[in-house]
Amino acid sequence: MTTHERPLDSVLETIGRTPLVRIQNAPDGVRIYAKLESFNPGASVKDRIGRYMLERMLERGELSAGGTVIEPTAGNTGIGLAIAAQQLGLDAIFVVPERFSVEKQQLMAALDAEIVNTPTDAGMGGAIDRAHELAEELDDAVVPQQFSNPLNTEAHYATTAPEIYDALDGEVGAIVAGCGTAGTLMGVARYALEQEASTHVGAVEPEGSLYGEFVGESRTEGEYKIEGIGTHDPNTNELFDPDLVDAVYSISDRDAHAELTRLAREEGHLVASSAGAASVAANRVAERIANGDLDVPAATVVTIFPDSSERYLSKGVYRSFEEWTG
Image (cartoon, rainbow, N blue to C red):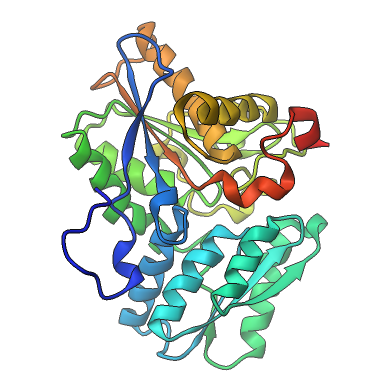
């Protein structure tokens, strides 16, 4: 995995085949593994959907050669789409809420994409609306729309999930992953449940997010610092299928921050807050397995670390919790 035995013709060929690494902080008798998606060329899990979505849309004629891709994004999807668009001869415009990582926006611009900012208080819903307005104003422009396009889920069903199962020879007891668009978890979960219906599937969200409402759990909406996962408006999260999910784990900013700093200090993982939240949730699931509270096909929990902490250094991700959230 991540080793290439021959020269490659394009950066697109380096997407995927990321390492699956054991997390040492786990209860006795249960293994936790994390898929390290920062090893992709754009340094995040979103490189997978960038390539997959644009290639499929070109094949289907939904996107014309030389056309324009317009996407509402918090950043990583924009980078993934920008890499793919650049290599496939497409123009790219990204609509980004102002509060999101400046580093990500600079990288999108470096990849020859145009950035359009929308007000923070309008959220992703405002970015989605603006993206569609721009598409109507331009000729030969499409909005792939990661929040509703089934190709998002298909990308992970076709690539991420098989990589996990191949690496572990199918010995997977639980899948735990953060939900932003929910494409990653839905794709991996669908594949996992086809292999073994008793696999536990856990969605991860920040405290203050409303994903739990999908499965009938009570949630109180609030602000959170964790980036890249969670939702304030479940109506925009069309890919989430509650029938594939056993539980939604709500993780506090404080717990996610403590874990991302522990992962760096103790295990050498330079990951961001969404990975911190995923790691906390994966450990909770592992504890349930170790205590006999979950009947799963293998004593193995797999989670996803979506990107690197480097894109969040300007926001003080490694400072004290109070400085990070202040």
